[in-house]
Length: 75
Image 1: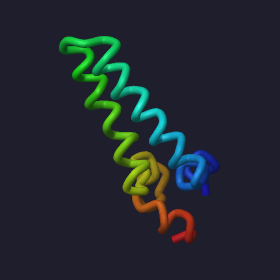
Image 2: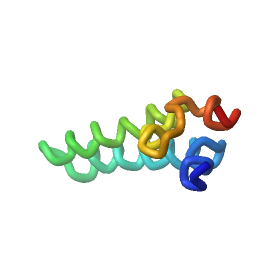
Image 3: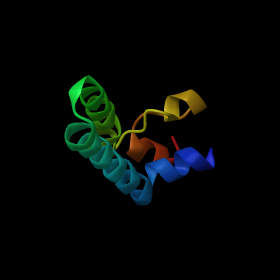
């Protein structure tokens, strides 16, 4: 399995996605403002939700399942 996908499916990878999502949402909402801020905040929702709901949006690009538990189980 791809090391990047293995990391993203791990607990550290989930935490990284959650933190990155929170940072992007906060930066877009409070730092940028306007249309650009809204776009950055919406983009930040993707890693935030991926971390919270334990799925990896990049995994299917490498032939792995979308679900974090299935990736960790090696399916």
